[in-house]
Length: 122
Image 1 (cartoon, rainbow, N blue to C red):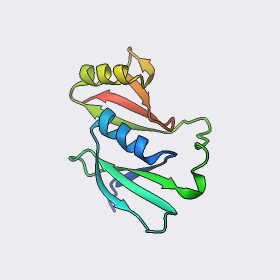
Image 2: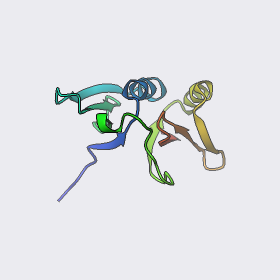
Image 3: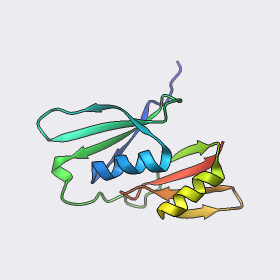
């Protein structure tokens, strides 16, 4: 039996802000959406266009009055880039670098909801 990762889900407070962040910071594009039509929730899947793995951004109307409590926020999404220096410069310009480990050659950025994203050279 073989499994492969389909997507990772993130509950988001401001869906428009989160979509704009993933587009600018990671060059992810919307691949599909789920909209029940009653305004109770909206899910937008964002992908890199090559791997088939997606990030599911879930907005829920019953949680639109407060940001999510991420606890100790030990979970994270990791992405690789062919242009590590260029990515680092972009993320510095955006003001989203939240932790850097130069010895290990990696850094983390925060998305609008505080989720950490690890940036690694390819």
